[in-house]
Amino acid sequence: MTNTFHARLINKDNFDPGLYLRFTHQKSAILFDLPDLSNLSPKEILRIEDVFVTHTHMDHFIGFDQMLRISLGKDKTINIFGPEGIIENVNGKLKGYTWNLIENYEGELRIVINEIMEKKKKVAIFSSKKAFRKQSEASFYNTGKIISNHPNYKVYVSILDHLVPSLGFMLEERFRINILKEKLHELKLRPGPWLTKFKHAIYEDKEDTELIVVKQEGIEKHVERCFTLGELKQNIAKITSGARIVYLTDIVGSEANIEQIVKDFEYCDVLFIEAGFLAADKDYAKRTFHLTTIDAGRIAGLLGAKHLHIFHHSFRYKGKDAVLLDEVLRAYKAFCKESPES
Ligand SMILES: [Zn+2]
Ligand SMILES: [Zn+2]
Image (cartoon, rainbow, N blue to C red; front, side, top):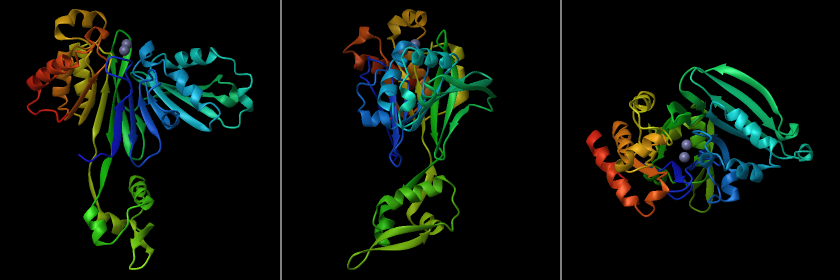
């Protein structure tokens, strides 16, 4: 699978969970959960446009303040998707500060909160130009499991149980555009920013007659040439199906949760999943509504994950990552014939 995105866990396995994801051809970034963001640079934080929060236990939401601090004064919108109650959680955080000067800042920072429930969602907006007072709360009926729809990807939700609702997320790329390097070479086309424009035009469903200016290697200097989108699609690109990336953490390993995940997501290519406790501590996992290694491996197997990353282990297993992974993989193999690639 070629890499069209970079996804990395923000903190070391035992610490606050969170995933930072960025597509190679896009400036913006996506965040799953809002943990301590100290391991992200200010530049990386400023790229964040969409945040998907599983639930608002402190280890998953403490980074909201860091994101807010870095983004103040900027002209941008941050969309946050989270479970029932997240609008009031954000309202409470914003009310904890004094905003008497913020309306005079040049840039407008807008925070749009999407509160996801079983049959509806609520939306509220907090703007720096209105001193972050809650505005225009509206309710909409959900039309399905898709909560965010972009030209090149969609995000699906699964509402799960952690004694409070905890959301599982799946990002699905619409398709992949693979550039055929040997064809570029044959046609003497130089890679450059035009390739990004070309990809955007495909994702935005532009007409095949649309013209794209391409750098071409001339005998003397580099020259420019115009191609139609259709010509380029036919000659230098191969369109393949997109990857599905699933992020799951802080759920109890109940049959109901596992059934719901398989029903909502069916299968995935890359899975980031909590492996909170070893099998021997399953009673403790149940009491705290977390997954064991066996639950994590079983879910990975049922979803047929090709790439598997485990995280959010209990502090009691510091230095025992290999033992945790071994248990997960054994359970995985019992539920899936193939082995994950990493
Ligand atoms: Zn947690
Ligand atoms: Zn939790």
